[in-house]
Image 1 (spheres, rainbow, N blue to C red):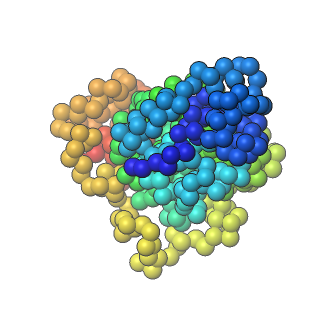
Image 2 (spheres, rainbow, N blue to C red):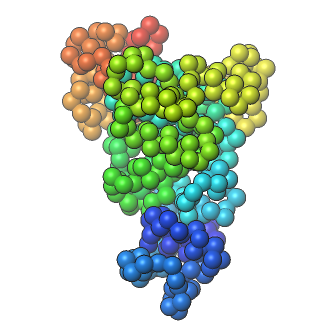
Image 3 (tube, rainbow, N blue to C red):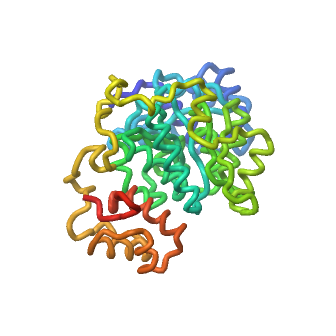
Length: 398
């Protein structure tokens, strides 16, 4: 992996200010790029930063930026600066775009024409899980790349559904690429990047601090033509993404709640009252963009030269992104990968090792409430430990 020489200055500035300076782009434009910002700082002529910011710039040495670049090279990460060809044009159009993106996986997905964000609560209802799966599957069939935040809940459902449907997905995280957050999904990422891309604007070692997540949401919405809100409470972080999408001139789609008195959908109701587009079906999204519904056309009539695995429809995640995986990421016979799971997830896997079971049976045997059970099963699918089968049956992933 080769980097142009000037990217070290972009890394230096983004490290020092963590992309939080509101007028950073005004300063970059004024000085003609990050390299000139650095040179002006070295000779003491740099203006536009307060004393706290000047202190951060002074404490961040250029040698640290070089170390970050070398670290990324050793890890297989790619750094994409705002002037690179791969940098998404959609991000260039938003307020305060990232100076650099740290990427792991299929960077060509940044250039995908159709990208849609799917977001929602970390504790969704069974209804919302089913809706998210259905929408993502159908959108993937219509050549959309699913973008979400790699968190538990709806994010996980969105990513998993995209991959299981033979599609692609982009995960925008609120910490560095090195940090194992959330741990349930971190173990899955080596499989994820075979058909997905993980990106962050934070250096690889950055911790998942609370302020990082709403800050990264502008990237999720900014990458996409629209954002679909599946389930959001009145104070849900998904509302931040939806509001940012609206501010960026992007479309906001919202799933109508199945129960208007359920406070878990308070955010959905507010969005619909404020003008969000009600999405009763994925076709409501396609119609908004005048996109032909490709899922209604036989697959053999819709060749896709850009999808090297377009022929593998309906495959499980492991089949679709590389067949039975035999390396260190595979699920071996002793199920050693369950060691990092919580007790509820371990109980599910232990039962399924004995035989395939209906969801109702699993609920009875484990005592787990049904909505949470569906969520745990989805997370275990992401990890490649279990797989869904016909008739609401689950079993150990083969």
